[in-house]
Image (cartoon, rainbow, N blue to C red):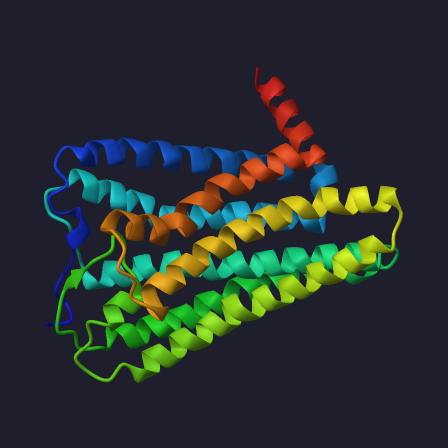
Length: 305
């Protein structure tokens, strides 16, 4: 297969008229995701009292959600209405790059949020001396640039592979699925993928788990009022974390770890969780559970009227 040849998404074949139902559902979901996350970003940007590390990191989650879904929804919606479901190799690599940069950023942002809550609860008096604006900016910069650079290098290696097939049994471009089509040795790509998995999934999840265990230990020794305040800020993060962790583990399991004999519709649904559920659930969780964000959003809505 020549490097310039198109890939074909096989799961769009023979959908019939049901594709219009999928298109309508996908379009509504994309509009809702964009709207909900835009409201969170606008509320945090406009309200000066929300210019704090915890809320800035929440806005980073929303920016990342908009970025990741922009790499998925427009393309899949176009394919649902199209009679041909091909994509150029270059466009496929770019889509895969955007989607997996989003996934890597999501996990590391959640790690920064867990660290922020750990410092706030374990060292409340020193919190503002530790989590300074400059320090937070550096952490966010590293969080954003590492996946972008690493996945960019990985994409370059993928473009150099000679492929023996052009059929993708996904509804979006997946770097590992492309690598599996290689006729040549892809050991470097596999090693790079495994290292990315360790640095953006396993290590962050381990640090998050450690942070929340320490928080629970501290809360057990504290007053009821302290516990209430700590749980109020931590529970939304934990809900978001569990949701994304389940979604990303499902995706990794389906693509890399084992080959499961699942119905196609279930396999597709599980592989798309990390692109659909977290971006729409995250803003709802924070808007409903954090009073400061909720009040600001209500003021924005009332003001617009």
